[in-house]
Length: 242
Ligand SMILES: NC(=O)c1ccc[n+]([C@@H]2O[C@H](COP(=O)([O-])OP(=O)(O)OC[C@H]3O[C@@H](n4cnc5c(N)ncnc54)[C@H](OP(=O)(O)O)[C@@H]3O)[C@@H](O)[C@H]2O)c1
Image 1 (cartoon, rainbow, N blue to C red):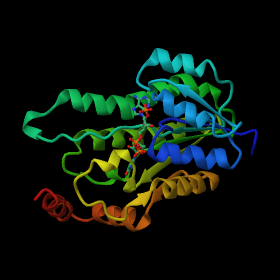
Image 2 (cartoon, rainbow, N blue to C red; image 1 turned 120 degrees about the vertical axis):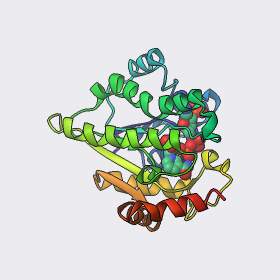
Image 3 (cartoon, rainbow, N blue to C red; image 1 turned 45 degrees about the vertical axis):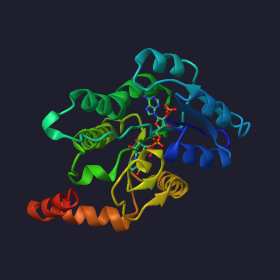
Image 4 (cartoon, helix red, strand yellow; image 1 turned 60 degrees about the vertical axis):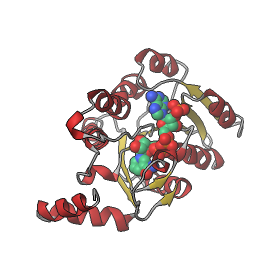
């Protein structure tokens, strides 16, 4: 295990930070990534098996320079992301829409361009998407579209990487308590801690699962609504707007 290298984007906060402590605590060689240098320095000083790389995942040149410092990654966890809502649909904010798609989806393409070649046969890429992509939620035009894109990217990539024997896990967390959700002003059913989310992601990846979703009492409920006639979910989703 000690010779396995895990790179985690978005390790300076929330789920990524919890994943960092989980993997580093188990003895993996962990590379924490993010933009917040102060936080990255703190993570890098946690244990000898931890180091950090500061870069913005949306900036090709920065990602290229970061990748040049790495020779091999056994597990690439693409977790960094942002959530911003389209608050007034009639004044559709295309800048906000583009920013969310850029951070959550386009950045994944940039990361793949520069890091895919570092993953050996038997390695794995884990995409942190969201259970929000299972059904449409109000004000989630940008966030939901970006995560639906991540789902397709991961599932398509899994097929194309069969020959290279590189595995792909797609992760659908439910509501997790982090700075990203602290700003939500609505009820978040079955909210889990970031530490609990990290444990479940670790367990799913260790079991070589293609698809990891939790908590199941939320994701299975959403999946059930997704196969029922549309009007049922629509009436529930619209009620949440009142
Ligand atoms: N919390 C939830 O309920 C929940 C549910 C489902 C899915 N998710 C997904 O889980 C992932 C992590 O979310 P979280 O809740 O842990 O959020 P968070 O606490 O806000 O952390 C977001 C992380 O992403 C990094 N990041 C954002 N933009 C970046 C950029 N341009 N370049 C580099 N790093 C960037 C941030 O690092 P810096 O600020 O240092 O750059 C930070 O470490 C996201 O993809 C999110 O969509 C979260």
